[in-house]
Length: 111
Length: 118
Image (cartoon, rainbow over all chains, first blue to last red; front, side, top):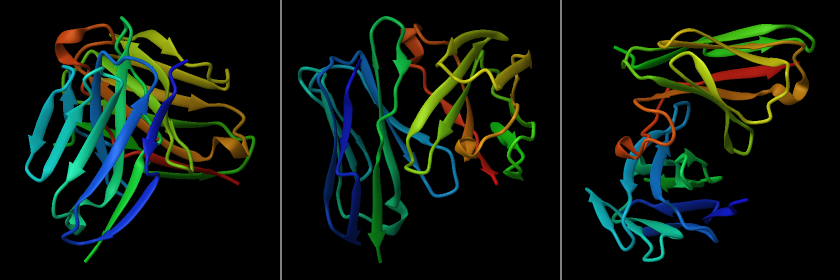
């Protein structure tokens, strides 16, 4: 069974600060997706990373896939209140590419 | 136009009742899913259908029965509701099913149905 951990579980910061959240496992991932879920809404895909060491940028968000494809990080620069939400990582592993969601990091950015 | 829609948005009912949640997607996707998100925000897959056929059933109690009349609809019927069934239920869809690497299986989620069992 794949053990998937996201950290921190909760994060509350002030507008303008930088932050990094993590997604770790002992298993090798085929690919990994990051989703953001805003209050009262369903999750929305932010990015998919596939290659070990891959870095993808989405405006102020930087996603990195670990070289060994066992972990990933999401860095947000100059956080804004609109970044508030639950950030979920969802790796796939094995031949069936089944998505398994982590428990998420609940981010609150205060004005 | 809403890509993935669910009804109702909120559902409050008594223990022991039977209820249904409906889901429709207008994206032309072949695969649909039901997820349960508990009070701690843990999102767990329940079922997956591909072209109206069940492909994933994640040890969900028999009281939960999904039904897919066509590939654009996946409804969830729950019998004999229990207190522990209280959660937010999300429907989702994707272009391809698991095992199709080319799409990396991006999932499009509905807005959720908050079920409260009293």
